[in-house]
Length: 397
Ligand code: TGC
Ligand code: FAD
Image (cartoon, rainbow, N blue to C red; front, side, top):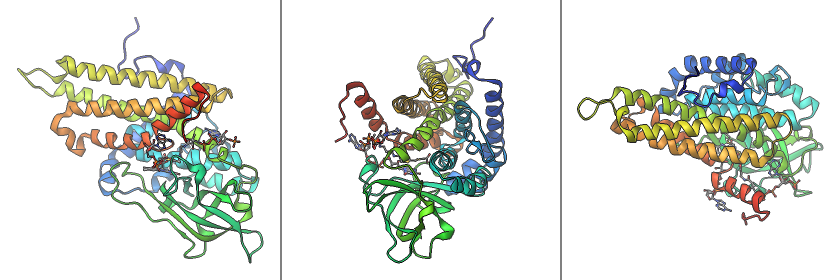
């Protein structure tokens, strides 16, 4: 007789292959044994240990969906099961990994020359080279098409561009060895992608200051990128991709990973709230779990987590078959981030005053989930992407 499992209410495990289950278990074990014990202090101190990427690299968790270059070459769903495992511990750890895997290794794999792939991908897969992805600017976040960063031909040095401009809110930038920077080519006005290799930048031409005192995502490191006529060899430009399609193609993968990733954070909130509700007694010795209002909060959150998981698996399968549209990814990114944030906030209430102590781990998820709803396209922007697809009329401008 089938038994209801509150940890997987709609039986999503049945949709996974043996290989996907094995990868998920490896990732979950690493995250619970090696990330969970350090997250509380890291979040308090706003400290990110770059060794984490090396540890993930040793387990084959970086760039896992890429074929070759020392990467595992697993399915899209398997890649997202890794993000779910990491985000069960902390969205900041998942962020750092998503940038490395989807936004930087993904960009190099999709758009890089053979030389760029050989130079960066194997070392990035091991976490020995850390990447950052610079699209957002101080004056252009939701509207990156209006970016001001510019690349012009070096007037003296043949075969070089000079990059000038600023990017902000860039995950990993202070510790990155290689930064994918999107800038407009002065001669054409078209957006191009450049691999800015820190080792190649003369002093004073590349600065990557950290943004301190964040109210969320404190276990990952975020910063700016300032380029002051930074000379970048032409062979560091992605050869063929032009326009917003470049960064957005990478974002499709990262947004997909977030859609299942945030379910990990929500599931952690559910498990912790459930355990607390069973333990904590109020009014005549009854556990909180006995009260209907508490049960409804758990039922709502568990339902959203289960629906979100199924939707993400479905879109992942379509992605591997070449049938997924960007709007499908917008739909699951928006829905899962919104529901994860809403439910985490409601579940927080179950802890009463104790929710205010970081040791109960719930406030951290709530603060982090605000960021997931904001980056990679704020939810209202995804509403407009969907609205445009539904009506044929764009409402951005
Ligand atoms: P629009 O006219 O819609 O499109 C311009 C060109 O881009 C193409 N395109 C896409 N291609 C592939 N995938 C997608 N999802 C695409 N979306 C658009 C489109 O086909 C077109 O190509 P072409 O050849 O016709 O030129 O451009 P728009 O300027 O009107 O865009 C509007 C809008 C709102 C959709 C877009 O700007 C947007 O999505 N804004 C949100 C910005 C965003 O997501 N930023 C993310 C920054 S990176 C980040 O947050 C990393 S956090 C990582 C972490 O820490 O985990
Ligand atoms: P704005 O674009 O100023 O938007 C502010 C509000 O206005 C939002 O609610 C938005 O939905 C709304 N809005 C904007 N335009 C419209 C409209 N036309 N109609 C209706 N509402 C609208 N970026 C990177 O490139 N790389 C990274 O690695 C990266 N990491 C990040 C890490 C963190 C911790 C954070 C907080 C951000 C990160 N970002 C990164 C930036 C992130 O992608 C942007 O913050 C996000 O795209 C929103 O841009 P913005 O902050 O400029 O907000």
